Length: 183
Image (tube, rainbow, N blue to C red; front, side, top):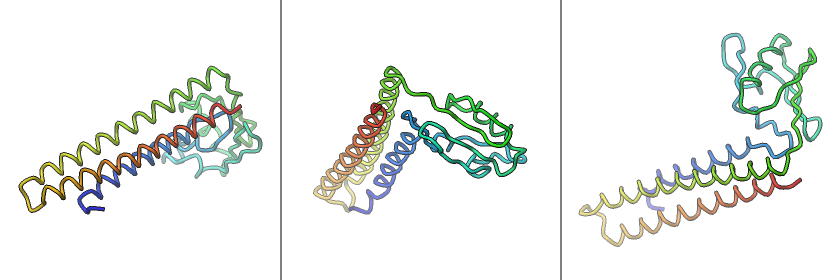
């Protein structure tokens, strides 16, 4: 790969990584601890991830259990979950917090699939923007020590990179959609 295209490759990789991380937080009827990744709990004045203040387990397919290391954090964890956008009301029994995920309706599954496809399209737009920035960089090389053939090669390489990452995005969206629609 041409050295000048490396930063664009890295940006495209980051876009795909961001999408896969986003898709991991979309719940597909099963309890997945990833939904808690963005939730921060006030731990003695410091916003800390839930994973650092308690033990998270999945005892059943649709239940996530959080056992805080410090029982005084139960209320804080509960407050953080209620303030988040996961849409699940936690139940607190004084020792642990349980999140019970309802079974997804057909309508909700279709809506989630649409959301996943939209996230995929957004990621593709990001890739195209990165490709455009790369193409602009190649055009600016005109009249420098880089020959026209080298410029064409760089443009082709940039397009191949874009195609490669678009395929990865399509695959990730398709897998997540299939997972959501599986009852």
